[in-house]
Image 1 (cartoon, one colour):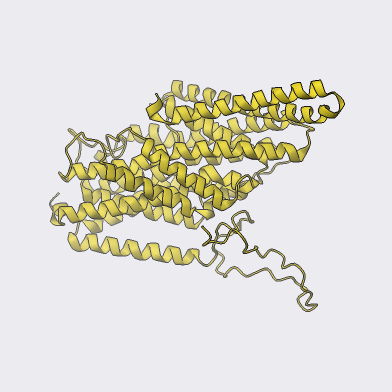
Image 2 (cartoon, rainbow over the protein chains, first blue to last red):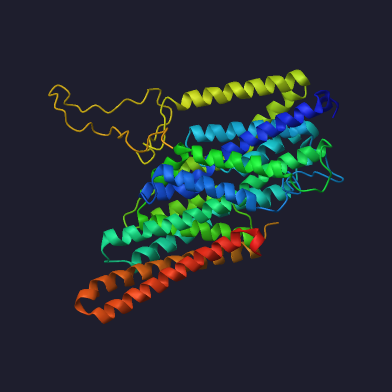
Length: 416
Length: 76
């Protein structure tokens, strides 16, 4: 406890707020794929339009959510009365772990649950701070581990049946017209997923900030989030959503399977139904895992449809290690932060450097609104810079179409 | 430890919800196409089919609105 008070409390709170908002931002851009990967993949929505809709709905959703988070960890950590006190320093370290993991998985184009990263980070920091006794293993199993296994399975089954239905009922219809109408349907279902995301996820960051303010004595205990907290959280998640985690969108939209409009509609309908059912009937499931499971199920439901199990397998591994990895990084951050103000400064600096390095690394093979529907490279560690594909008959020097060079036309990165 | 009861309820509700929406949408699409094709041959049947398709699309819209209702806490 002494160590954490060593850093000026209001400075610590300010640091936590900044980090929480940055986490909120990564949460937004990590999860754009949940709602918008399939409509982008099928051409139901232009990439930029899709992320704009998602951003607006996340913004609106964040303002609509009224439920106040009572605990930071949702019961995972024995916090509050009779339990341990989660200090701002622990939250700071936990957020560093969560952000690092979110950015690392983004770099690899892997959809992983931002909530799991946040819980993992907090667990790591709290375990270093107070020992393993702070963790409730029962809650960990029932709220994280089992749902993580069940979410993709149930979503895949639902999407499989829905896809079979969609194909079966429209069999023999004029392909084009049916495809067009399924695309229209996709716009609505994916919008619902975006709205639901806004009401759920921004609220987590609001909870973190509010509980930090209460812990530091800046806000009365038992009160809800201040309006400015709601506003900045809503803006951060919307901005993140708009920036768009294109790498993840590409993996979910075109990496797992090739999605047709009928499949896309079925997958989105399944994601929507599963998320709404889970949040209203009392069995919380991760949106990310549901969305990915739906795409897999839709891939299996199509005749001759192929699921790229290698991609699916990598996603599965990412889910398994999300919590422990975020926890490990947060644990290190907490160890350093306990050294005092210098430790906290070192954490912040190291975090900033790693983030900068990851963004630099991402520029070697950029994925953006222009190439998001392209092929997903299976090997992610190619050290080469992405070369424009040069036709092999370069000597004949015919000015033919340059194989796969994307048109830098309307969807320019800087357009809107 | 794990609430299998609520899990089964969620699973069934998801399955029913998704399949219902997809079925209505797919039938609407099918009817719409049948209607457009029949219009030239038999205007009455064509009109009927198109009206049916529109009604089904309307039901889809209602399902989506129900989704919005579920998402927005202020509505319930």
